[in-house]
Image (tube, rainbow, N blue to C red; front, side, top):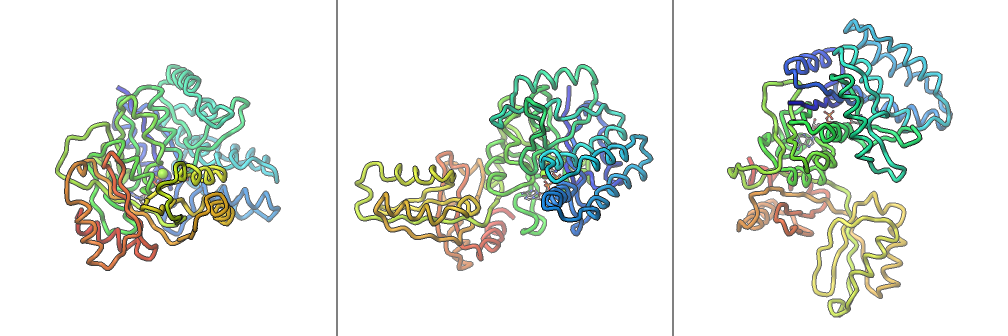
Length: 434
Ligand code: ADP
Ligand code: ASP
Ligand code: MG
């Protein structure tokens, strides 16, 4: 039995957190593959190492003095080394990185050093072999993971060393140059390693008691979810529950490897188990998630519903500008295309012009949309859920701008004005979950 154990930045912020990690790893001999993120925040006013590295890169690129940032970075790593009395010569790694700093240094390479250096410290502390992610996680030039090659390399490293620490968040192209995953990507590294070794469990250790039924930054002490399916988690994380990267489930799902999300600060708490099938039917709604900053292109034309191909023509225009579409609620001679605001920042006027010219339609833009997802596998084929949602929001005087439900009935998406976003989450949590 083998377990991949990933620790997020919040579990790696200082020497005290490192000590908790060591205790956890040593308490179960199955924890042979450890993945680490970069050192995280020590308190809410602190800066993550990854963010410092992005800032450092910007300073280098624009030729702004960067020495203060470099000192902050260096001190974080040196302090942990000193406080834990580690033998690894991290100052030499830092010195050689310092020599590489210049105007044209690759952003992916520089930012990946957060995980790289953290893994060096952790490997020295645990006595596990450091294996560089650039030698394991292999990307094709199209940016996709080459799973065959990655699996070969991961299996080889595991058979050679038996116990290893791997930095998360990056891999390499065939020519060896570093490629980052997207933010929060160490979760995905753990998942890829779990798949390649077909382990019995992927543990993801963070700073909350599990996946919570709502964002703890908005809802005071939301309930922790005991069990959740891969699909439900995917819906929640896609819709903003960024406790786990939204891509985390894919590598492990097909092999049915469960993910256990656990709290480094409370290791005896069972946390949340994420798996293919959950038998618990006690909760109808599993959780809520949401995001602000969506926009709606509202498209209207008389007799549109009789015009074959109208929707396709509209969507082709979004495709032309590489904008992915989130939802398309529709009426008889009108429909809306809901997209994330960040995706249309540079092309919203071009899209409106094209829609008008090519469809002969009236087009208006509503840029005040927040989406809230109500997710639950037990909602399917159960009546009255939308009724309860409308009743709850009606009592709070919150007007619903759009409503969408996927065919799986796993989630209901509600669009509201951004000013009502927090109120929507709070009232739904209080009336439907708490
Ligand atoms: P790590 O550093 O371990 O990778 P992250 O900061 O990426 O941790 O994710 C954990 C954080 O996710 C929590 O501290 C919490 O603030 C936030 N979060 C947002 N939504 C949820 C949710 N539904 N359940 C749990 N945590 C959530
Ligand atoms: N350190 C990276 C980030 O802050 C990756 C991760 O934490 O998973 O996004
Ligand atoms: Mg994370």
